[in-house]
Length: 200
Image 1: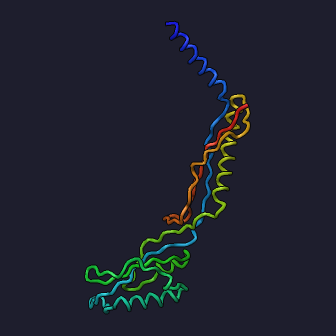
Image 2: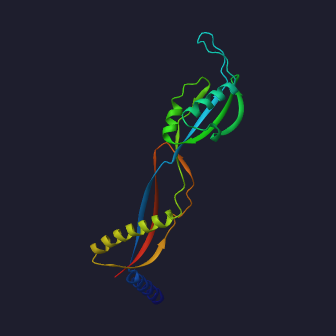
Image 3: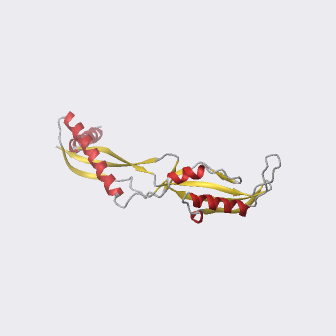
């Protein structure tokens, strides 16, 4: 029984010491930056056209349609050769089709979408965002630390304390951002760090 009382006293003492030395505050700091799209990815197909007497449509081969698309692209200042063929030509429903993706500026994408060429079809465009510049991570980390300091200062003031030196920074948000696509014209990247400040 005596041993249990001594052990209990020691545990209480250790707890109190631990609490008295924990003079710090740990805060999550947030930062974000919004980027404008640098271009538009547009998927399109070039297909042979079956003849239709009722609609007065003559037969056109894939080569014929592709040549017409190339000419129309040239008129609006778009180089067809920059388009990347996604798949080899496939025959579907008795129709030969080629699939392409081209990256252009938004105004050029809008002009391409307006083209009315038999055998030429476009899909919904996606905005393209380049990878952030090499200073992005450092810039965002500093913004997040500043946000954490602002929060910690406000909380410390409420409890009659002041913040001191930074004891630790947990930057688990650090990662490599690759080129991305989106339906939206802008993209917001978020960054956060956990900062531990001493209290005094």
